[in-house]
Image 1: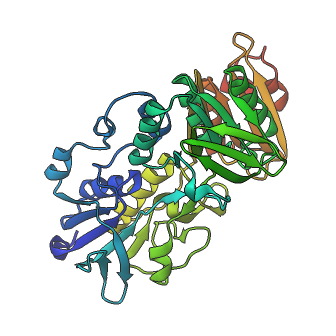
Image 2 (image 1 turned 30 degrees about the horizontal axis):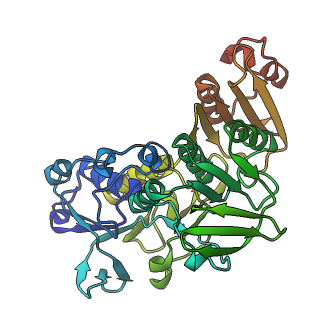
Length: 417
């Protein structure tokens, strides 16, 4: 690596999974220059997945979920500028402007701004009592405080996606009376098959959660600390606490104002670089090409954030690398662990394999023709591992044997002849 880089500066906007992993990956790749991480969140960067699960249900501090201890940043000479907002990017001057008006120059810039909660335009939502999104540690702390002081603990979760379901499961565990209101005709309608939607609907119903689909929330009326959530069909629900889990808005404002290409996120090439040779983007905010599926995608996952960070760090350090990962995700609800691998978009056929020894252990396999696109594995690590292997190598699968639970779940038994 050029000795000139010793005097160079890499600025990273966003200090969650993508930004933090990028900073440390730069050091592993031998980047000798300065590394500065900016983030609006004042907390030491922390893991996000526990927010809707263990962090919500326990009394531990967010420092127990730190991505790295403070000493690690000091050891690697990574400067943290927390509680600091970046207001503008000046590509011509190769600098960023902070909200206090100060300027920070860069040689390489990485945008890892992620996303923010989508707050739907519901009448009365701005004046609702104890209404919260869930994206940051502060959000969870607010929900915790409201829950502790709430007498009736009636919770309405607006949105039946994975985050909404995880929140519902966690609050039900704490003893709340929980209602889930989903606008679409089924839970998880935009991200999975009807089979998986039915499973999670039944799971939450059996746990005592009131799950209602086709519920378009139109109005929230508040009286002191009590809310009435009204839907377009005339139904209404009392709520001491409302949690909004309606999805996200990608934080592309800085990139857009800087003139970078925006298309369902910040468009980047196979090395996570934007059209500006000195600016990279990684994580939830990016629209990138996935070689396996041969299309551009935007992914909201820790796996994507970490993998893109590694690729971008290597590219910034002058190494030949491209992003080529199979996406994977997970969700924990009650005693159910869902592991997902691949992208099911465009599937034509679904096969469900139920294991004879355990009714809660099964897998859903998504095909387009004979091509395996994705696998959803419920309490079934073996199905997840096999699915990952088969998808990576484009293995043709014997569908008849796959659907037959009496056939031993081994690769050699499932390969199409």
